[in-house]
Structures are given as C-alpha cells and as structure tokens.
Image (cartoon, rainbow, N blue to C red; front, side, top):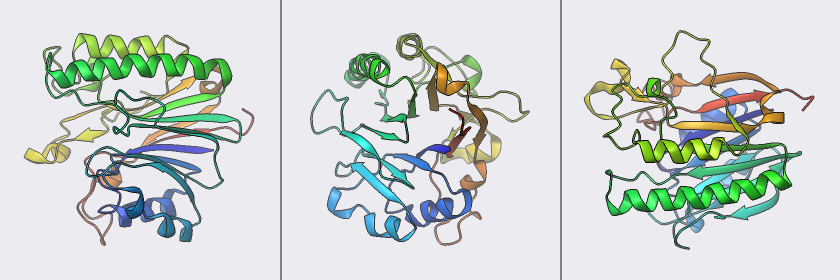
Length: 260
C-alpha cells in the first residue's frame, strides 16, 4: 500500500501534475495540502476519470486538504482539528484498516507573532485529537505539511531563531510523536532529506531546503514500512510538460507491506 503526502500549492493550477503523478506512481492514497479552492471548484470529475475517489475540506484562496484514493474512505472526518471553523487544515479517513490523518499545519510567519501563537494553539488541539484517534485506531498514520523540521539536519541553515525551527514548534511536534508515533523518514540514502525548497534564488538546484513534509506512523504501522521515498523528480520543470511550474514541495511516499 503506497501512501503519499504532497503540498500541491493550488490543486487546480497543479492538476496536470497530480494526474501525471497518479499515472506514474500509482499511489493507493494521496494526501494533498494547500488546495486553495472552494468545494465547487474541486476537480472531482478529473480525479474520478483517473480512477480515484476523493474527499476534501476546502477553503477559498487559502489552506484546504484532501485525500485521493483508489478505494472509498470510511469514517470520514472533515476538519476535525481547527481553532476557527473557517480554517480548513485537517481531514481524516480509514482505508482498509489504516487510519489516515492529513494535516496542513499553520506556518506561523514569525516567532512570537500572533500567527505563531495560533500555530502552537493549533498543534495543541492536534495533539489531543491524535491521542484520541490512537485509542480507536492502532494502525494510524499522521501526515502532511507540518511546517516544522524534526531535526537540525532537516534544515539547510538551521537556527532556533527562525520559524519552522524554533524550540516551541519542535517541542510541540515532539509531544505529538511521543504519543506513540514514529517518524517514517529513512536516512539510509546519500541524498539530502529535504522536501521543500523556496522558489526563489535557485534553492532547489542549490539544494537549499527543509524537511517539513512528514509521515508519522503508529508503532504497529511503522514496523510494516517497506520503503520511504521523496519524489524530487516532480520538482523539475521538465517533469510535467503540461504544467512546468511545479509545487515548491516534493511528494513523500511510504510503502506499507500487505501483512500489516
């Protein structure tokens, strides 16, 4: 079972990229963040024509998350984690017997700003939700754009004075992991761990990036992971001729064995 997280940075702008990805990599579950569209504009028909089901929690211009899958999800929850009702950053569903929780965590803008405090508040609510979900679903994966680096090595220029890298953010993430989750990252390759590179300054080609797109699995699920991959090929303009301007994030995939 292939499960993927991808901040797509506008689902309609990047629809050709998504359809190519579904055709090339054939994920069983593809979780998207930053849809930037309302429900009426969500491309359900195009995804169905590609052979995929979809559930989504949409918000105009900002945010928005969805789960695209080969089979229909069960026990769907739209936006279970929120500080305000109109902020669509979470969605959850069960596929086979695996609970999948998709997050687009608040960026935070700058340390000690109102948005930073909002981020910490949101993360506290996320932690409480995951704690309850783990009691119900031993086989569980929390994934998405967390806008936090787990380790110092996950930022090209790490400084605890910077957003994404601050102590309070990373402590909040560690508190979530301590609930009984494990980071699915595999560091057995010689490649950098990054999943996001700024559009500016040739950051991708200079490999100036951050690992902020994460998959966190419950212990029983983590034991069955066969593969971890960052699909950096999608970040090249030449990868999708129909839409050469790619997302600034790369998809991150894990493959889980059938014996889970």
